Amino acid sequence: MSFFGFLSTAFRKTESKPEDDYRMKKDSNICAIQYSTWDNVYGPVVDCIWVGSRELSQDISKYLARNTLSIDLQKTEETFENEEEKKKKKKKSLFKDKSDPLDPLLSKNSTTSVNVHIFSNFDLIVISVSFLIPIQEHNQLQASLSICLPANCLKNFLKASSLFQDRSILVSARLVGLVLEREKKKLSKHQIFKTFTNDLLNFQNYIDAHIRSGILNPQLSMTIFHANPLIEKIPLKFFSCALTSMMQTCGCVLVIGLDEEEISYFIDSLSLFLTTQELSLSKQLDPPNVLNPEENSNNFSVGSLFKLNKLNDGSQRYIPDLFIQGIITDSFQTESLFESYYPSTIVDLNKKIVYQTPKFNYHQFHWKSKMRTFITQGSLSYKNIKLDSQVPLITTVKKASKSVQSFLNILFKLPLSLRLSYIINWKKLFYQKAIVLIRYTNSKL
Image (cartoon, rainbow, N blue to C red; front, side, top):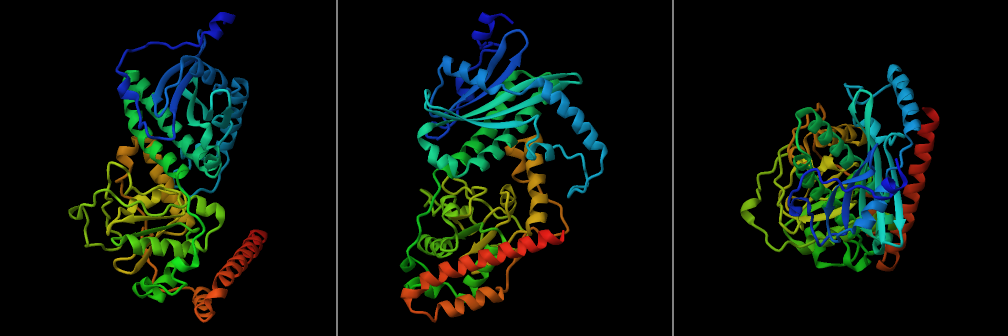
């Protein structure tokens, strides 16, 4: 390829369609998302740009395309040979289908690389996912998906960097599936890009919610551990079950109810048991602008579908991978919990019942099933799939652990001035015991 051919990174006009088809929300932290491919004649080519809060100039788009298409083709050919050898070896798997297409994507092998670039001259943070699309048996398309964020959100980006990278891989895998479908069904590029736009809107909500999340260290006076009129609404046994389940589900809790003050009160009480990093990935209650009681249902039974009250402003939307969050509703869609990487606890303040998803290994099985369906069918299809399992999707936590019960009994006997210190020391001791147990378990494996 000539020198001038490389410099003029191509904007191939394959089809002229309205730009509005490829636009996302403007009030977002995502500036734009760019899909680029490598052409053997033109070099790096910008195939599509989804515009968010900022339009990228042609020079910036060219620069991103040149710097994100960074897979070493010779290296990837070697890794494909190694992968063929690995496939011949038998490995234990949670799945009946051991050739699960999602596993290599989650393991971040060398054919799918994720890099984070900070371009200070453009005031951009770019999450770049580079991957190969096997269009034909001996022909692979080198491509990249670049998610552009403003540089001023660097601090908030770093707290969830690993989550953003993992989610970007899944979105890229969805795009790969659409490109392969286009080659198979002879669809136009406009058709697959328009379909992909719907998936990007959910991805945009995910990124925005995590960047804007964060809870300050709550004051003891705003929790159940201090004299407060709301303490009469929350039985001690109910709170001890919620705290026990929270410890069992990696600190991930969803609090639902109809009383805004009670939800905030409960979230503050549980937040005392999270680390600073975990608090930065938690969300206090966002009151909805409109709450339609006809959308809710009081007929909840374990294992049934909860209806999720979706609003245009997204204030009543469940956000996966947050530690603690609250929603004003008396019902919820159970399957949405499996969009999160970790198991979850559901605290129903209306009925004073604590629910819990399966433990980590079983939860991972359902999570991978959901994500695999997302890759093949998209975000509009995978939300309402039914998960088949011998293990119940939702169980009721009826009894608190002895350690939590003992802790709370001692805590409420202490004067108010000593309670916060006791909580901090108990939390440190709990983490130390957990580390010792994990090390002991690993040594026996």
